[in-house]
Length: 298
Image (cartoon, rainbow, N blue to C red; front, side, top):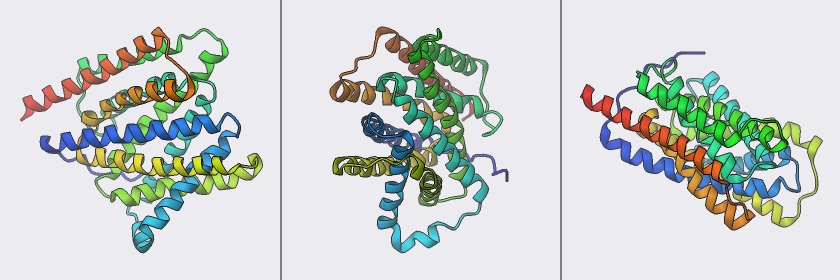
């Protein structure tokens, strides 16, 4: 894999817009996840993942038709494909988990992704992470164990699916940060959608079941919210350092708890709240330490 240049310093004034884009991304993703959770009740995960990517490609094709050929030109094809594959694996793992795990619980476990980014920022992003931030990462993973509560029943085993998705999503976010220095936002977005659509189109005939009209509408909605969510995520990592914006993925728990209660009648148990608070607190502490380090270096 080609090694991109070390990330350039980003002005502090850009951190605010980056954070706002991250919050928008989380709202879109939870909306998409809620649609997926509803669909996997009656349709295969393969079919739902296919619809999410197929309609994302359809939306992008309509919006970007005049520029599509130019946008598909990339200077780092291998990294684009690796990043796109990471996103596809994350989506498949997470949607499968949603079939068995409450939305808020799955979203809380996915909050580990920014901590994974922090852990990976040393070897991959060439950023300095001190012992205090490493402690935040370790405590965050402990918070995930509070939510999962390893013991062996079906619910706890199913919770390992969003846990694995959080790890692959952390790698995905790091690769997004790499590509932000050499690729346009739209080029990266097009590649992630197209690879997912191609792979899932090859797999979906073996898992196909008839879709009623409302299900087609839901799949279209999932594709639209997925498109907007990933555009916002790429913009967030383009405008600000990974360690500055990644902790704000914790806002997904607010959306997930609301959607879970209003749509699915789910209310997180006390341990989910405790674990989520530990993970979110760890993320916020890491963000705080990032600001302190940047202030000392300036």
